[in-house]
Length: 298
Image 1: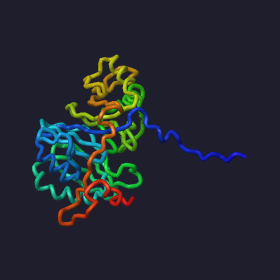
Image 2: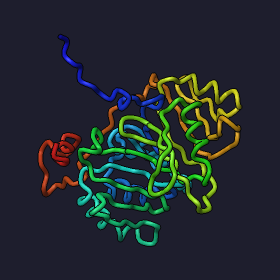
Image 3: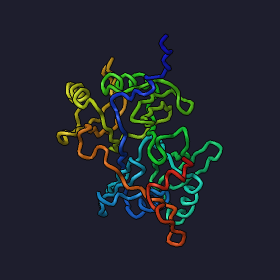
Image 4: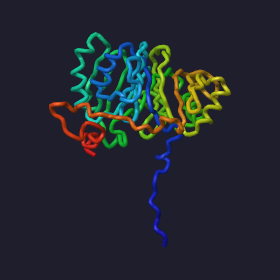
């Protein structure tokens, strides 16, 4: 008699067409303050190989990044969810930069019982930094989601857009006590569109970058409607308008930099340092990525 096969939830492993959320791009007016916040405060790592000048900076957070061109101010309409190895040490770092960031919009609040720290950058971008643990794996340091505030009544259409046009996994539900769409954007990564009754700021041009497996399918659908905003190269295009496939109505604007899995930078390994190493308390072998395992108890 054949053994009864063990049952697995195979659908739990389906990622849909978006296989990775790689970076968020927002303009900053002052690189020195950006270094103080992103590198010293948050403890991220400046990419040592790319954008090493004063007109731009790439900040690594695990295998994701922030791209920070120095030419203005952009504020994402929502919250960026980060996973950190140790939020207690994060809070200590944030306390050390208070003086340098005084007079800006910088602030933070430790929500120990909830397991995260709410942080606002000098120009108003908001972050929610979670303690790494079993629920965040495989992310020990990284970008787990970007949550966007969207007008009331748009969630259903946004879900249809990502499901039918982008061919992503999109589910309606609740997020932070409001109706929302949760779009799978990689392994333990999501784009979340949360309905908000407040008057929302106008779109200011910030962008996200995603990798997709079926590169041409969404492109053809967007091209038919004249919605390709940029034809960058063989491996990349961009679009901004999110519309309801049922009605054609424009629902939201968000610049998407869309890359194929054959893009030269797909899967590029990024450098991540241990921000808590000091010259006085230096421990050989704990200055870079290997420290993540011990920091999260895994």
